Length: 476
Image 1 (cartoon, rainbow, N blue to C red):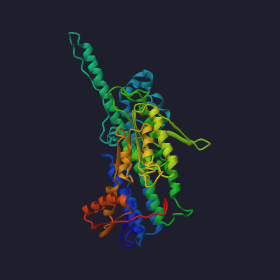
Image 2 (cartoon, rainbow, N blue to C red):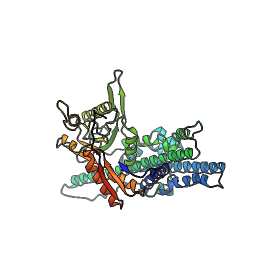
Image 3 (cartoon, rainbow, N blue to C red):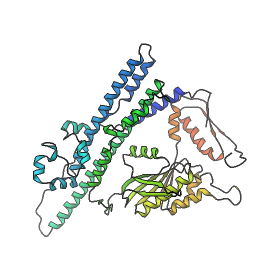
Image 4 (cartoon, one colour):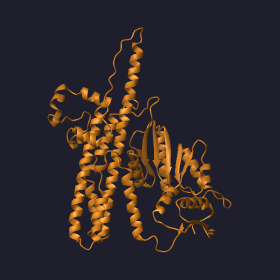
């Protein structure tokens, strides 16, 4: 808690900090080589600020703003489709893609397929993806949209005659080199797909935020004339928000190299596949984590039976995968906790290589000791349940008490992440001084002290205080 002069955290400053935060996100997640393909968020904000000028009328600002908005939408859509074309071309250069090309009939290759001369449909590409393609990209477009990732070329191995029965060894060595090249090419393309997913996410957020700013500036929020919901419905129909990313993900499954077979069984020495699963506790958080990592969420069906029981089914193979379950156990605590435990059980029974529970809010953390007779230590009981369901590692944020980490056995390590650095960087932008950091109870003194030290490291004067809590009953 911060005790600061009244009114110093006004709405104007909060809005400025929120806009600054997205501006930093946009700058941070711009992929090298793609800088000119993102939404020009700063330009659109400057157009809206013209309303503060006495010379600018609402009609003039409207015309300029919506024209710039349409131009940005067209730019993002065009760049997205170019990048998808480039990614399809990269995938067709992988060994699996080359095999599918060679498997095509010569007459089909010569005629260019159903798309006409010069516009062949990529082999193994779903019809819906082929219909979204713009044709073969030019070399300039491919170089610009590739973000510095050239199309992998098949390695040419020169055959050297060997005697003394060494031909078999040479063939085995050549096959091993080909397998390593195939895996490297596949994961290079996979990283590019991750950057493209982040590109879609950050641009979608930018368009949503700028339209909310428009409604606020025009005082349309909460009225029948609010344009935000209508614009978000339109965004879903734009090319970069369409289902093409899902189709590309399916292409990756079909192009998977020999290290990970179609059944999901990883060969010896191959890296496990990373998969993210989320429950119903905070799907928006999971979607943002997936976008920032560039890893699509693994589809899962989480519903309720008529009697209220939790029904869970993972809709994708997770065998030998490194699975992260993103599920805070926030209210309703019991429902979210059961979803977490059953998700862990489901992926463990599906032969996942490792299961990590990402639990930003650890439910029952306040019941970490016996304050009176005949009460449970619920935080320890939750830890035992996670271990029993096969969780290999737990990641939390700002645990209520550090000793909760000790409730887990040595085979289930716990990462307790601190939010202090993020909060300190935020309050640094507020230019505060003479701040009091207050701990609500004795258990939070260590965190409050760390927070104060972080503020002092940024050149702010800060003092420390603590509240002695006396409760009449639980929750009061």
